[in-house]
Image: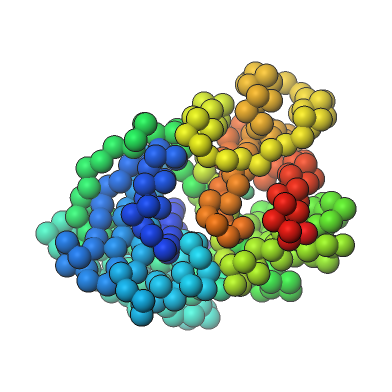
Length: 364
Ligand code: FE2
């Protein structure tokens, strides 16, 4: 039995370390419909970095950049480009979560620390995971400020309203060949997750690419963490391309859930978000495979949305192009109608689309 004594209430925030937090925040505000809610920087007494906190419904993103050359955020950016530093979890007791995780073998990143200001107190601790990625444990039940002590509230609206993005559905890691099992055991043994799905390279392969994936989850469905590793293909896989461009393992994509994917994707496309294009032939096959859906097929096809069905229901999903210069992090937009899957029926069409983009970059 997995340990159930380390409850994670959900995602607290995803923190990105970037080269230019002001511009990244503007991109997520204007293109993805996030609302800037908090800020820390020189004006608030933080001398070495700036952070912008943005929210949309239950999603919280933090963008942090260094203010000088000799700073861990600058080093991280030099090595990885823009990317996810921290997938932070909300916990009822951060000291206890940290003590249990580290007793079971998690590497210490930050000892528990109580942060306080006029809005109350917040406790934070962190462990290191794959690559330079960390998981913070955040206890904020006694904190009412805009984000954490040291941050001031920002009152800005999204440039053109929100985009209907509700919550983080899953966070996917890319790790090196042979490392998937080690990290899946880490989440099982240390955080008490269990394995929800396993895709081998038979399920996920094209003429060029093969990869393997295991999905770890918290048994409640609040947190789902797929882990990919490359498998030997005839050419360089998308996971290999990521590992090279990112300089090691890291977060490959974040899936953001919506209750109305047709209007969310129409909205994002209007605002200039680029998506992977699926071949026209996809839809004849998809209508056959998936059958009756609540949405209109003409909308699905017009917006290039992918559809998959399993024995529990169906899901609609779509993948953005990488959101920074390096071919590393991208987003998935997902709407679930009962299915708890990940769109395995779309993997082939999807990977062929990724490979076309990879070939255009000269990386296939
Ligand atoms: Fe995904």
